[in-house]
Length: 362
Image (cartoon, rainbow, N blue to C red; front, side, top):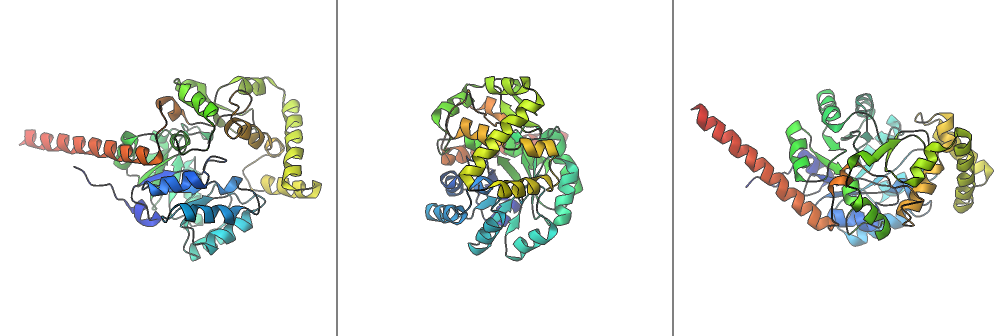
């Protein structure tokens, strides 16, 4: 029997197994994060979509549900970014994940407090830049992944990044079972990160109506990329809403976004000045054009309709192509235990093959 696959990622994150649950917006809540950690993996709370004033409450909720280390994600342009950073440091959260937002000063502030900085990137140049800014670990998401995604598949992006950086690398995008973990380790990765696979568990907060739509999706080609939502490439389960968005003109999509922005501003207590400041932060983050910034409110409004309200027809279902390979809802405990059994079995088979080959050579 192979070992329990304890890697350097386990040492850095304080988890038993090199399996990470990503911080999916409105999905990676306290319950899912804690369930992942209790099962031996490492969970990230979706701090980027946690309401202002509620970050500390969610961190404390996780601590009440698990005594294992966990992480929180954030974006520098979110209204409560400073609130989140303060809470992470105060409560000694083990790690943070993020995109391209934080500068070297912010990353140093977190690292000086003992927080592991673990950005997610979708391109080689972004991985290199992340390490230059101080990242401790880099998660690389290939194009198979859900939500905002790049064009390079994991099988190409992963070895590219492994050859270019000197920090542990985690493989994401298309990961859903122990075979993927064994393959990632064979490439040289320190573990795997999964979003869709954890979204499709019995510990997920996503309503059953939407989970059933995910489970019913068996063709990976209809879990496809579109730019119709906010101007950036994103992968969703195809539905009537996606098709309607793609048929709309750009002015119509912008008008729809203004409507959603007003609704968001009213709910968040942000007046015109507050919304203008938020839009400016998004625009100057370096990740969005003007049109993308204006269209940004479309995303949370439509995604929440799909995965929070449970309306898979009129909302959006972010998804990696791995959803097409998932046919049942396991608990996090069942999922991670199975992944480890499968990974060990594949590595044992490879060891046996290597031994047999050596014997034949003799």
